[in-house]
Image 1 (cartoon, rainbow, N blue to C red):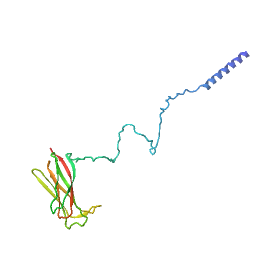
Image 2: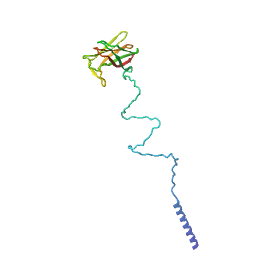
Image 3: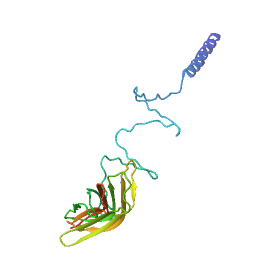
Image 4: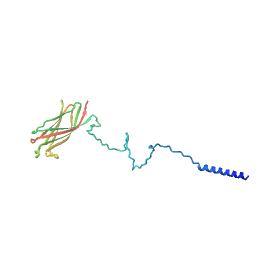
Amino acid sequence: MQTLRNKLIALAAVGVLAVIGSMMNSHPATAQPKTTPAGAAPVNIVNTAADPVPVALNGTATVALNGTANVNVTNATPIAVRDANDPLKTPFSKSFPFLGGDFDDSAGPATTFQVPANQRLEIEFVSCQGVISSTSQPPTGLTFDFRVGFFDSTTSGVFELVARDAFQRPGSMEPTWATFSKVLLHVPAGGSLFLQAARSATGSLWGAGCTVQGYTITVP
């Protein structure tokens, strides 16, 4: 009887130890993270606005401007412009140099320019200058007269400018006479523009030139 009791106690002790051992060796299951191939791990970079990460654009992108931006256009040749309010107008500017001679109060040879048959020329500004080939004091009262006009088969017109006072250009000792005026001269399509200069006294050889500015209008 005593022997049976001792065996039951031993079996009970072994059972208790087995339960305790199983409890000590048990661990909660943990999900393993997904394996990412080498070289392709995601990276999260956090930078402040004062220390941005430099990037390079690959391909094309659309840029949105917030506010007003300054645009600088660089062209090897001048850009043709038109009056936005009248697309038929094209700015016109042309210089006409011409030589005079030893004339006594008479005009030198005229320089002409023919307006295309499909355009009308409107002249708004004329600037002219004359010069004599002398470094001495110019004659008192010497003036240059400039005539800017037009003619065609039926009409003609002329505008006259007078340069009365001489001055010396920077870097040149030759006396120069200059004049500038706002005009309104209509040269019809196919008509001819002419420019002419005259000196009021004899003396040294002289030369002159004019620049006219305005616009052309395409006509039907």
